[in-house]
Image (cartoon, rainbow over all chains, first blue to last red):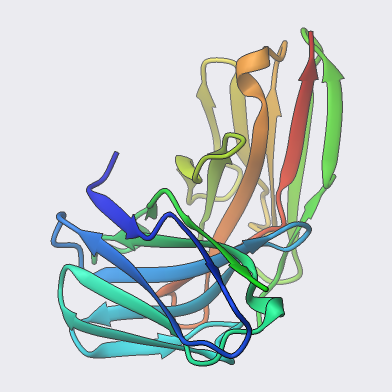
Length: 113
Length: 111
C-alpha cells in the first residue's frame, strides 16, 4: 500500500465544534484528495490539492476547508461540525502523471452527535 | 457536473455464479478506472481503460469499455467469497484533476 496515514482513525465530536482531520503521505505525490463516503452515495469529492498551497473545491465542499502547507500533509477542517457530516472520510493521493490512479488511506470514521 | 451512473446498487449471488456491474455516462469519458473496496476497508485500484472498445482481463475479472466510451462493465466469472466487496467505477471530471466515482455495486457472495 502507498504510504498514506490518516489521523485520527475514529472521532466522536459534538455539533458545533471544529474538527481537523489529517492526511500524511510519504510518497511525495503532487495530488491529494479528500472524499467522504456515505451509504448510497459512493465516494464524493470534498476538496483536492494539486500542489503546496494550491487547492480547489469538489462537489460537496460546503462546511469544509483544507490546507496544504507541505507536500506531505493535507488537512481537512470542519469549521462547525453538523450531524450531516457524520461519515467516513478518505484521503487519496496520486502522481502528476495523466490518468494516474488514486491510492487511498485507511479512512477516518467521524461521528457528530 | 459529469455523472457516472452505476447499477445495480446491490447484488447477491451464490458462490460460483457470475456477476456484472455497469457504469453509464451521458457524455464521452476520456478513461474509466475500477476500484474494489472490501468491507471495512478502503478502495483499491483495479484497472484503467482508455481506448474505445477496450477489453482487459485479470484472472476471473473482465473489464470492458464501450465503443462510444460512454459505458463500461466489470464481469466476474464464477464468483468466490473473496470477491465480496463494493466495486466502483470512476472517471475524470472537470479539469481532469478530479475523479468522479459511481455510487458503487455492493457484491455479496453466498457460500
